Amino acid sequence: MEEPTIKVGIIELYGKVNGGFNGPYRVNNERLLDGGFAVRAAEDCLILYDDAGNEIMRQREIRCSPLHDATFTLFDVTVGIQFHWQRKEEQTFQGALTLTLSEENTLTAINEIHLEDYLISVISSEMSAEAPLEFLKAHAIISRSWLMAAPDPARTTQETFAVTGNMDFTSVNEIICWYGRGEHALFDVCADDHCQRYQGITRFMSGSPRKAVEATRGVFLTHNDKICDARYHKACGGITDTFDHTWEDTPIPYLSSIPDAPAFYEPVHTEEQATQWLLSSPDVYCNTTDENLLRQILPFFDQGTKDFFRWRVKYRREELEEILRMKSGIDFGDLESLSAVERGPSGRIIRLKVKGSKKTIVVGNELEIRRWLSRSHLYSSAFIVTAGGGSPAAPDHFILHGAGWGHGVGLCQIGAAVMATKGFTAEEILKHYFRGTELQKRY
Image: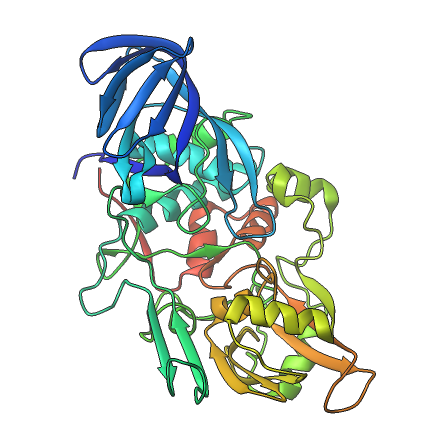
């Protein structure tokens, strides 16, 4: 196996992109460009302009290859799409740039780069470049593994939408959405949270990410000699969850539920246990309020999220009814209650009953629940609900008491970083979160 070159989708569905070449780039093997540029999607082609506004060429695809160590910059790149940290950024990248005319006469910007260079950016983007080296090494291994894991033919990789009842929602009583890994038509992996955060060389702040990648070059997490589909999230809340509760209804042995601690904690089975767990503050790795440590671990745009371990969200009933209508497309009438039908071992709700005066529906899975109950996303679906005021049929407000940040499966990033500060090695960290796995060097 040789180090692969991968295609990363940076921008999709844009009508125009502005950027700059930081050094000479050869464009479609025709001419050299250096400096600012703009690309606009027209009816049947892309139009490339130089920094003076002169038209350079019209093509359906424009490939820009760097000479020497030149880089390119793209302006107004959207990151954190549909999450509470969504924003636009200027980002700079190594490697080649391909601009392609895609659906509905929009353009897609793709960065072609060697896998190991890609990983330096990923671990600098997912977490702070100042994080402990052993944690960054562990992250390099799982990011490399996740990208190169071959999908199991027996498992679906596409998003599926299962409805019990009629699609017009008049008699629907259950909506279950499975969000699989998915495939991208024009590139291997996207640059945002849907896949792995990749923000080019913008986040490079120290030599630690490069050291971590070089120290683990070609090393993969494996199970039974197969590269692992190594998932990760920001904070589990004390106990991780399982793969089959989140993406596909197929268990994966190394993506099982474990306590985020050396001690054993009982998994959540009942609503009484969920209440006790979610209102507690157990001694686990990701339970930290050390601001200096969090500044060292988290990238700057995540540092504003301080209540990730245990959190609280309060909605006025009318506000939550509006969010539910907007996100689900269903008018529930007066919202009467939200109640867990099924939970995973981390306390995350897998199926949630939404009861209103006009409609009652069970929704799942974890990600869909988070989408329905927030204008962006809830931190996680591990929560209990209390209602107050008004009447039992129409409370004044709903309060969600929750735990964790993300889907909760695989490696807990904050927990793993804390483990590294306690002296655990990358291998020890990975074998804690992914039971029964081994490290193998493939190139």
